[in-house]
Image (tube, rainbow, N blue to C red; front, top):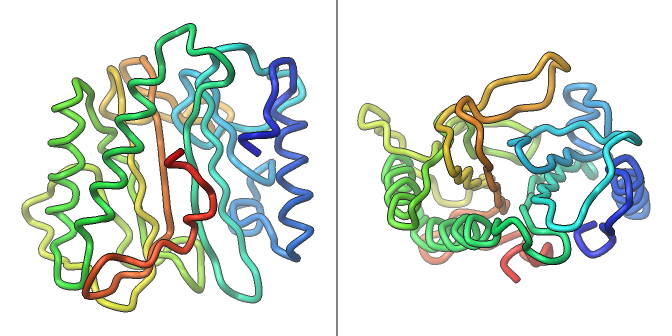
Length: 229
């Protein structure tokens, strides 16, 4: 979908393309199946943080900051992944935010193994964001995934909650997400009932992989999405 996106294309057309890919594998859209989301994928543009609704009225432009979040179900198994990118030339200087999100996700995943505290990964994400001059969104999170879209642990947050003593467990499947922000720290819902934006404006990038926790480096199930390139 990232490679298919073009200037002048509607987000509805991009979503329909993604839907055809899902169908070619015999897979179903997880947000549609689980929540009745009005699209195959969530496509958020510019100041939209997440859960953007695909629309024929929303046309992609040069330099747009785009996030595509795809989760799917196949044969009773669920997976989740996503990534933000700049369309065409980076005329609005969004690339540093995109790169920070990518790099932080890579570092977070590399530090996950069985027995590691979930809160410590949150601390790592927020610390790395601050080093890059950015903030994190505190009410969006990674989560367990496998036999349904959202499972335990439900709140793999982008900051440390000291009271959370939960640890990653070996041989479990989780979706790890970064939500890196220029201005905001909380995502708020618009009147359409889906789209999220930052409480203080600005821009937000998200990158996500589904992984299997091991006692060493995790197995990245969604690595073929190429979000790190």
